[in-house]
Length: 345
Image (cartoon, rainbow, N blue to C red):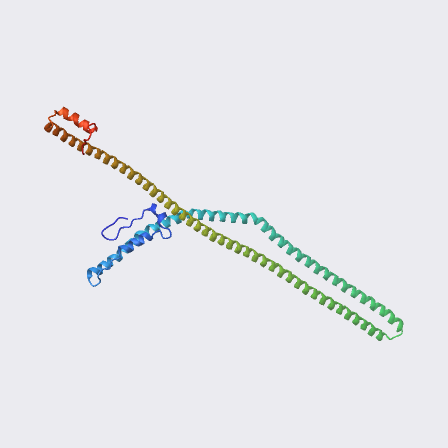
C-alpha cells in the first residue's frame, strides 16, 4: 500500500491473494481504512459535510480495491477445480452406461423368462379347461347312453306286464317314456352346460387372477427398477455432496497450509534479515571500534609529538643543549631512564 495525502491507495497483487483471502486475512486492511476515516469533520460547514462525503467515497473505493482482486482470485480457484469436476462426471456417466450395457443381456433374459413363464401358465390353464370340458362332454354322453338303456329296460318290463294293453295305452306309455328320456337328456344337457359355464367362469377368474398377478409382478419389477434408480441417484447425489465437502475441506486445508507456509517463509525471511542486520551491525561496530582506536592512536601520537616538540624546544632554549642532544634527552625521559623525572602527556 502506498500513501497519499488522503486515504492510502490499496493495491493487492495476484501473488499476495493466497495469503490474504483467508479468515481474518484482510483485517489489517480494514483497520487501516477505519483509521484513515476516523476524523470528525464539522457538519455545520459545507466543507465539513463535503469532507464526510469524500471519506465515505474513499471507503467505497478502498473496498472495491480489495474486493475486486479477491473475486478474481476466487474465479481462478473455481476454474482450477472445474476440469476435475468435469472429468469425474464423465467417468461416472461412462461407468453407469457400461454397467447398464453389461447387465442388459441379463435384464432382457429375465424379462423373456417372465414372459415365457406367463405364457406357460396360460397354456397349462387352457389345457386344463379343455380337459375338464372334454370330461364334462364325455360324462354327458355317458349319462345320455345310460338313460337310453334304462328306458329300453323299462319298455321291456312294461311290455311283459301289460302285453295285452290297448294300443293307445302303448302309445301313451311310449310317448311318456320318450318325454322322460327327452327331459333326462335336456336336464343332462342343462347340467353339462351349467357345469361348463361354471368351469369357464372359474377358468376366466383364474386367468384374470394370473393376469393380475403377472401385471402386479411387472408393476413390482418396474417399481423395483425405479427404486434402484432412485437409490442410485440418491447415492450419486450424496457422493457428489461428499465430494464437494471433501474438495472444500481439501481447499481449506490447502489454503491453511499455504498460509502456514507463507507465514513460515516470512518468519524465515525476517529471521534471515535480522541475522543479516545483526551481522552488519556487528561489522559496523567493529569498524567503528577500529576507527576509534586508530583515531585515538593518531591523536595520541599527535599529542605526544606536540609535547615532545615542546620539550625539545625548551631544552634547546633553556638548557643550552643542541637539538640532537635535546632529542636524545627526550628519548631517555620517554624510556624512564632518568630517575625522578617523567613527561605528563
